[in-house]
Length: 562
Image (cartoon, rainbow, N blue to C red; front, side):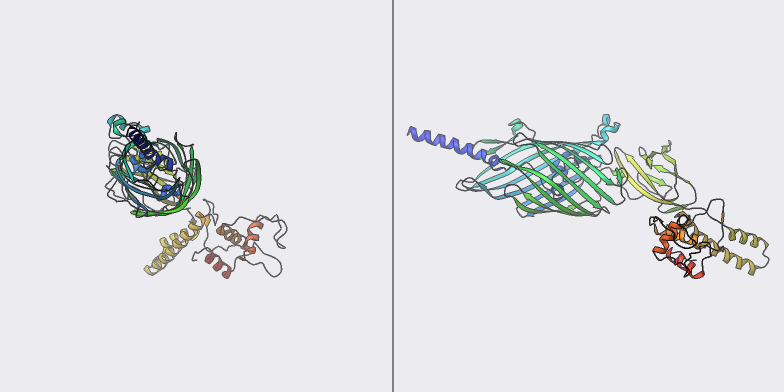
């Protein structure tokens, strides 16, 4: 009887030890959460970016700027729901529910199946609610966050063994540093509780025994290489974000994850990433590919991802919703300011598509108390009555004026297009003014006014061409609408309007256009592109006046009515 008891004791001890060791031996870590089609599309290198609701699962430091709801699923057994609800004070509360199933994992003696249900509570903030930190500019760019993760149920089934289940909980800590408008860095410490601290840091099996939860440290970096203002490479409505991450753990070698996202029109996105993962005895690497769509209210992402335990390709889909009434900082979530705006910017003198002849523009308005205004990167002086004013120089042609409203570390950006037109003096306009002064009868005056209006309309067209650099008119010179245009001048205007590079002229073009003629490159281009034709006698006649037919062709090409 004593031998039987000893045998049962050692068998039970071995059975319990086997049970609590099997998750790690199989390579299943239920509290290592890697979900969301967008992060997986970038190789799960997301801890340094952490710029949407999925940051809760990767780096809770990003929760300081997060809002929205995400639902990710592969099938009915693998669903993740995440929510980040902003308080309006630079902080957000988060909640996630994760159900996961891994089936038919090859193990010694058969296969294993795992089911888990996890609840995550999260909080992230920039510490702005503490007066001591409110005035510190550096801390406005730092987000910190914490997760409390509870494993509600963990079921393990192995061939030839009874089913068993476990419960447990742990914590994550995350930091996100927004170094500038184009790069961020993050640190994520996952499963940081020491074993048995506060009853957490391990899994407790129903058959007895405990299993430690491996901790992971992540160092990550993200850079928006191509983007709008503030990026190293400026491309309007284009964006390229590159991410990198190193994952450290005592259980496996250091893992490298790199990925990127290319977006255009802030609507369509393509993603790719190389994701290293650990399974017992080896490190595998796979290429993940994804795509996404966004509009102001909702979005959808999809990714093709390789699961390491069975080396099978899987597809995840995420559906996202961004409630408009959920705002991170209430005073800056506003629509584009018009002349009157009852929000952060109460008044502003700008509007879209302003046309001016001036070489500078004065931007002025009024803001709410505490709001700072920057115009094209220049801090606008704000008076005691909260009015501001700044003078911005303008370049010929199109100008982009960017207005930033900054408040409590948040900022909102608006863009305005301003066209600085060239001022052209029309000789005929002066003649009409003089004739109007001398006109005696109403009929004569009415006829002159109609002619004056026609000249003004034609002047506007000429100013457009001068502004675009198609026609060259010196500021002090008068432009005569009725003056004849030479074929050489027309060749120059047509060549400039095409935007094509001027060709090299290595030999004489025509009898009267030698290769060293100042207009030779322009003439060669328009002749090669069949915009103007030479004469049958082998001449081009650059000094000859343009015919009526050629003039109509000119304005048709330039899309200007004569």
